[in-house]
Length: 560
Ligand SMILES: O=P(O)(O)OC[C@H]1O[C@H](O)[C@H](O)[C@@H](O)[C@@H]1O
Image 1 (spheres, protein in one colour):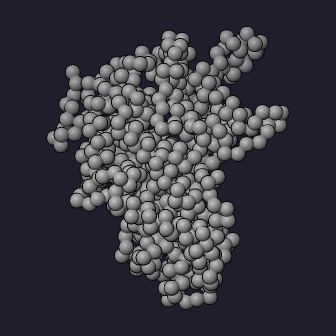
Image 2 (cartoon, rainbow, N blue to C red; image 1 turned 90 degrees about the vertical axis):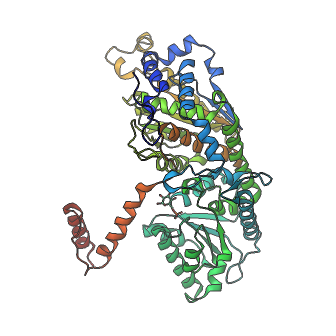
Image 3 (tube, protein in one colour; image 1 turned 180 degrees about the horizontal axis):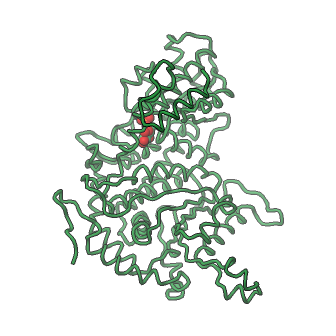
């Protein structure tokens, strides 16, 4: 007997749906099978359980699924209304219910001739007006036409922002290293630890530096504090007063939705690049928040980056669920989270240029899906969210892969690799280093899936007492994502793929992936504690006994 499928708010209890129950009944059959058996039962699965999205070639054959599993997962997606909800998001409906607004990052990459009116506003022309303004500014900086207070062209851009106003551009700047203009360097300051801003500015010349203050709200403590520090550094370095608005105008621009706060800070709003409330911070690298990236790679490459996103948006919007990469991968993620009880997901780029990609995905996925009530405010009935983590291969192989191979946790892993390298060298004994990298990539996914049984070890003459230690259990699932090369378009495609995977999971869980109320209390508490730490005459004790004692210890040891 199924439980009630809807509550008083009309929300589904996803765990009470027919498909959920069918998946629960199906689970023991799959659990009983090893990937070796799945491949033996269906020798073609290596070429059938694959899907292409744009330039991304995705193999999901090394997952603990049968054809029936996929069918049941897609039934669950349908029962949860995934297609309607996707269409509602793409149309600009207020899918961010707790903040009553749209989540329209997909509009940021619509082509100029597309049409989308949301809340009475022509979104596409707004987006392209900002892109044009960014492009003009980027052109001027890149050509040397934009000069600093002393007439020198700009050599360094310092992006000051945090969270979504930092991770996206910082990650993409690294990823697109090969597309940057020589002689122009971007730096990213985010942490309120003064070491971040000091160590960055120490090496720079204020005469040739532009600071991009990137903050959706323009009230974030870290960003405003760092921006004030950078302004002091700049004016002191140039030997001018704080009142010198014309000097600030040549060295400071803002990216924000909040013109009032930008003006209050002392940045001319003529030097402000706007975006909109419907762009979430973690979905904003393709908005004006990408300004520093655009300066580095140029407006044409930035347009290719946006086209890449759009390619996967179109795929997500139009492909049947059976051929829809974000849907398949999102639903397989649900399978592991809610049936295998997996808690984490490794992301393993075999590309040094993607070193920051796992950190970027942590904000995208964990700030989105780290929720324990549904969009309607009811406690969820099943685990949500997934802990994303990872490092580039092959570094991870010599660090944490031991747990992936022989540990007790099930950790599904995404392997991301490229056919053509951005750099290559000859290997020590022939071949190319990139081929050696990719040999490791393919070897790891193979060993994770198929392992090495005790019989094989015995046949090789491994002593009996060593065999239990050397057995590789295998049956560890992975997705392989391959692309021809790490280009701006491919990077956009990869980001959009994970954005939509995140959305698919949120839809099944019935949560709002576009708010982040959990971050707020920590901010309030930090603000409340600042006075106690900076003003010795302030009362030291006003919190719990642990916090009070720690604050006393800190003030004592600090010695001022
Ligand atoms: O861009 P800002 O308004 O400065 O916000 C920066 C970041 O801080 C917040 O606390 C949120 O958790 C993030 O989603 C956001 O990206």
